[in-house]
Length: 227
Image 1 (cartoon, one colour):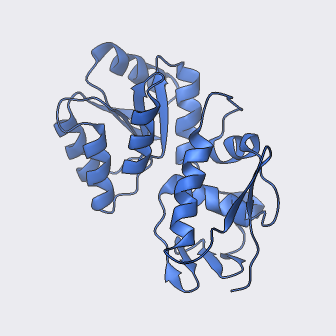
Image 2: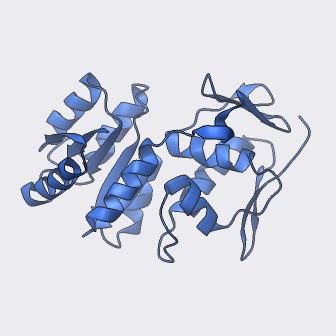
């Protein structure tokens, strides 16, 4: 993978870059938000790692600028451990995942692999998934609901794709973490709930009911409804 790391703390940046190099990845390091945004806008990367707090622009501004420019490169945001509000703020800005500091490199690497992963094999043989009035074109990378286009971020896309492959089934948080984020269950993380909530809002629209139903104490279900 080709990875951009935007981190102003030299020790953290060197730790990440060294670990990624040992795993065989090509890594660019930017130590300011300005330099990181320039690289992200001018070069192609498989995934971007950015700190939340940076010499301006900060991580939030970088992600918002990328999404406003139709650059959908997956972004992992590094945040202060336990700062839930900032984590959610980062996801709302367009980041695909977050990781609290301090962190183990093995977890960082697993999350980056998950963000860069493309569905492969038998599951990707078809060109379109259809659940009621919801349609996902896997070749054109488009989603429509009752003919209306729905714009999704990369993680939202993977989450919805997995749900559309299992309509009407109860999908637990553990299942979603393993299949969408590619890491084991962590009872302290709310990343699944945050992304499901965002996806649900996009699918329900201003007037219609939510298509994703919460099963209390179990998980989530994508309801099957006629188009």
